[in-house]
Image (cartoon, rainbow, N blue to C red; front, side, top):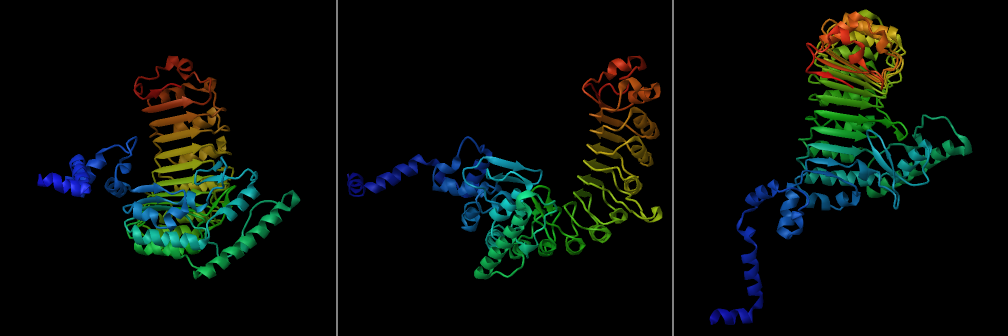
Length: 487
């Protein structure tokens, strides 16, 4: 009777009692309940929509995010909603997309949403310059991220700050209707606007946001930085625990900025634990690569994209004593003047050399590269122009090659391939794809007998390859039959 009277007087107590009996998870501690939520799939069960407690705990489980709205970070909502973030990608949010547009321009480094009025490279660069964040907004967001997510391990960001936008560079020829001059004027206007906004906000002309990340996020191990300059490298040089670093100075058809030996030297002196380094659009030279090799003793993988190094940079590779993988991509030239052969040196630990979409018409530069990389065990060519027989014969100096991959090398002939293959005594794996000048009818008995002892063999020089029928009389497939792949 007394219980009924109390419930009639306080109807809310009955509701609370019903909630406590219906929600069986209230008796579980947060740590135990988090372990249960970790076992549940992320979709299609939105656990965060059940109640406020589940919403809060679900936010603790999320460790990675790809941000699309910068205001979500600048307002502090992202760090309060997901306080345990370790992997953050801010590249999309740094260039806000226009409204009501479904046009995307993608690149291996960046993906940008464009407006319908943007239709050529000049307007694309102008669009990026106008749409990107103000430097003050970037600094504010990065400061919030650095203070609230000190356990950050991976970060991708676009450093939109430019010390002088009137020095906006365009390595293009002028076009009609004054588009080139118009972009230059717009760059100056935007630079003046951003400089004024910085002064109003009280920010000096330094890399404040990146410096806060370097100071507070001591566990940061991987960084991808776009719009990279020497000032940017000076700011991130305090990230002493960096292991994987991707620096993008310029992207063709997107934007054009660069960094030099000054920034690379500062980086090398402070970030000595680097394992993987990728440089895109770098205006470096011998000094920058030598500083990296002398200071970063643990460096195992070096990737150079769109490199525009000064003459003689190849000789600096010998300082990278522990380098295992060297990758050159989209290089219009290797090294027009590598210097005397006796000064080139070599990389004793190098195991893999990859050349992707590179111009190999410069025989002097390619010959120097092959001498430095003479100890490689894996050699890969993909869509390289200028790889003729005479150029390809230079690879005979790499006598330790065990795996050779050729793809999209249309100038290479069967005779040139045979000359090199017969000189590689340790060759075990061969891959030939889309090399239209290599004819199966020109395969000699000695080359066919070499194919029979390979552990791995993929032969598809064109769409009409019928290798098995062409060399049926040479008993192919006896030793390598388990790994033989027919096209």
